[in-house]
Image 1 (cartoon, one colour):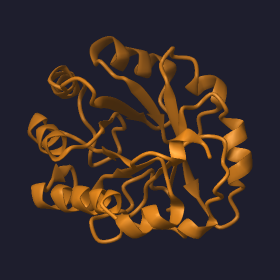
Image 2 (cartoon, rainbow, N blue to C red):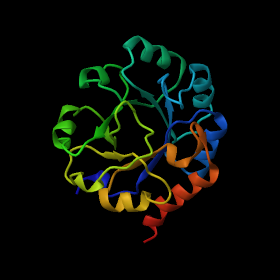
Image 3 (cartoon, rainbow, N blue to C red):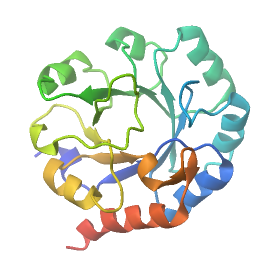
Image 4 (cartoon, rainbow, N blue to C red):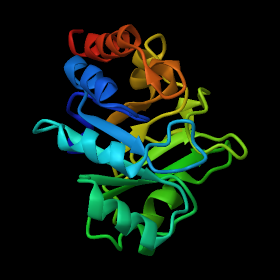
Length: 214
């Protein structure tokens, strides 16, 4: 069995917009926080704010930057200002583009019923993992909608990060079905778009941790 299927499920909270929300997530025990550098998102964060958030992240918590069809220049400008550990590409970027920044990356795929996931994983062989999200036309993440987790093959060659409509009520079931390396949540732990809710984060983490206690 592959090593990434044998360990506890990691958690990333995405769409962090303030230092206070980053602290909430980190205190709850998340493994990574994500910041969105996409101006059309209600969770978009400025470079100035992102710099402040990233500078306060403690050791062993990863900082992820999310981009959607950004130019190389824009991404390099962000990287010159904000300390990021991992890049997340949520647009139509190809493997050559994703791997051109000398940083590890994950590629997000919006899953449809006919998506060839095996082919997708081979197309981004240099990725550290593939994030599987719900498909919704003209929406790049944060949909609040799930997809059929049963269509995810169990023998994919890279770690699976599961996203799309996850919250404290369904994440345990999602993990049991899909057996991902990690889960990624944004709207499912919010009170309002871009504003995290402490109780929802804690509920989410409790649900993930409950699987370890079984």
